[in-house]
Image 1 (cartoon, rainbow, N blue to C red):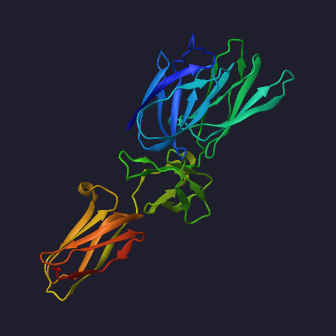
Image 2 (image 1 turned 30 degrees about the vertical axis):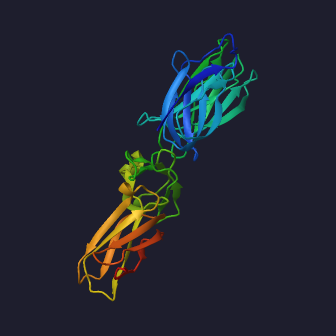
Image 3 (image 1 turned 135 degrees about the horizontal axis):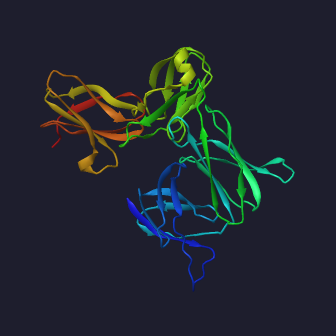
Length: 361
């Protein structure tokens, strides 16, 4: 972890009179665009956050009365001071979308900001999508105008917000929108069990095997299925590098009306192992110790598994290893030459035959 800190300045600053911005939100995203953390500047405009390194990051700064700012930070490797300067904006409208049933924020909702003209004609002014916190911010809003938000999201009933008059105060105007889930929705959540705590499994494929229905999990690990008729179904959930998960559910008349929330799914890492025979060349069988080490790790942390074989046992197996890595296999025995070989694990079971020989002088 590295300690990152800095100050949020307004572009109205000067060397003689710096203008800092309190209550600015600084959000950090990794190289895959996944949200990893947020800090807020204090009364003096200073923020601080601890981030995992090394990693490529991008920062997004949102501050009252200022334009949002996105800045690629590149690869951070150690603690660093990073200041940001944001440009002033006249007025912003922040639309916050939440779910009626739970009060939870709705991410990925499409928000169309509509402007009502003096002739009472509604015109599309801007389009955006809500973030993980269920918000989207629109800037450069002209004064003395009426605005409203039209919000749509798969699995929810569309909704139009109340109209907001942007007056002469030049401030941030919040618009609260509460979406109701469609009556026949089926919703679930997928987490990666390999992390602690379990993290949202974004981008997993969810297939309803008896139909053509298919969807993907969002950045919070949530998936939604709508318009399913009553019946019994099986879901196949697939995440890259993880074991597939199959689950079953039944959509009855009473659950179709209120919707169905499925249990949380924990995807486990797809693992494999090495296996093979022990061959003794010109020597009598003796006890053998086999160790599997992860290449590139320090010696005290590299051993991923081991097995001891006694005379008469000819086959060995070490399982529970992560796929896609290079491993080094060690076989040792008193009076025999050590057997060492490197092999990549790219299948569930990879054969490696071990040949033990008499130790050379």
